[in-house]
Image 1 (cartoon, rainbow, N blue to C red):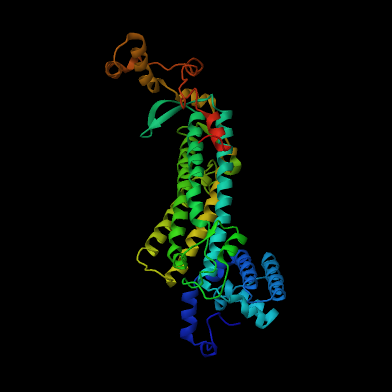
Image 2 (image 1 turned 90 degrees about the vertical axis):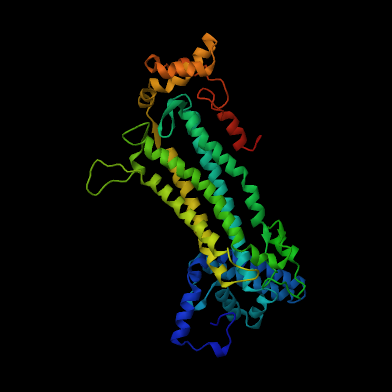
Length: 436
């Protein structure tokens, strides 16, 4: 089986060539496995476009379509092997077509390059995985919103600088994370618009003299439009992937902060929530340990995604127009990031479903000092003095501050977004597609 660019004079496998091949192929023969079905989709549509352009007959198109589906079945059954010496999925697919269909298999590459071929498969994969991640993000927000609603009336200290600050509630604490997720969901339209442009038909980045209907190809593949300038295709490679990763890190940074709270608030020092033992790990030496590894690894995966963003930032920073082999390495970070995010969201849902608030501990933690600001507010309301005077009075007389009963207080918190009115109904409306 030969590579797509290889002629007979290159087929001698010297030691130098083997080493060169190993270095230049890198991980593509592994990474391409996840892209195979998307490359098959693009190849089938390209074959259809070749028929429309009169380059192949209807019968030839049908034979190519059937053979591409046969390859898909091989892939589904884990029987589609891509080896280092094959270089990439494109080689294996085309060689399979040639073995099956002879010279007809060689026609599939008419009017396209591996440049637009891999980028099309990658963008189809990105669209698919982004949609899946966003669906999971919606599910995570919905699960956490249910948790917030179920426990909305449990008081909880609010913190600044990791010190007790003012009265909060479980509903308000969880609702804040839900709103962040909703904000990120609503920001997804921008990143979707970057991915929703078809590179197919741009060939090596300069178009082709074959009359390929690029609008037809884009429509058939479910893209909103084709990339207009063929040169944009390679300019966008890596640039779009960087912005996908940065958008995804916007999601995972929310999960990172949530995880840090879970680690803190389920620990012995706070004990605001109990974590089900089924989602904890133990120690090889300390029998009593119930470790929050899920939450800790959420933070670690977020750091890994930040590293992938940094990799792409540097990788594309000094490239001119056109294709450069450097761009091969833009594939792995975006694949790893999208798969990481999916797993992180699933882990977050698992955590939310397996933590339980501890009401007595939460109530006890709402000690007198968190009512200092509210005591100053009362002086303003009852004595008619300025807040600054009331503030100074409470600062100089901290001992007069007493803890207040939640049942008495919650009816006083009528302001939207306060402990007694966390606005969960508004969040539910936004999450379900209502007002923004």
